[in-house]
Image 1 (cartoon, rainbow, N blue to C red):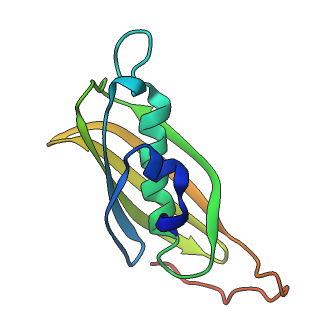
Image 2 (image 1 turned 30 degrees about the horizontal axis):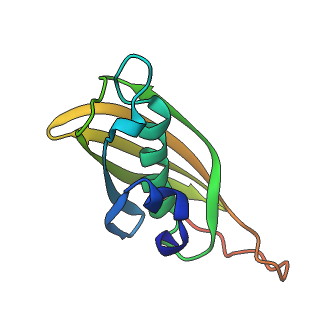
Length: 134
């Protein structure tokens, strides 16, 4: 899935690891990602967290997309900061899931994201098998 993600790869997001409902991705903040206050635009921090979330919720196989997400920005990020997003599956039930993503700069937490996922129904109309809590 990540190989086909032109948006994330185009912004320099790197896949560090993914498997078992978890994923790690990282991104360096560039000058083109700064807002009018000369700090990192929140949309780019959200995109990094959303990418890690997407990678984590697709580790189980069936195509899964975001049903929603929200983020809390805790600290500003600056040009040249290396951000790492750690996504963790909290629960999967039926075709839905909840994932938490912590975005860090070194040891410092800069944002917290929660995403809600939805597994797509296969084109044949067959429904995926129900999934229990993880």
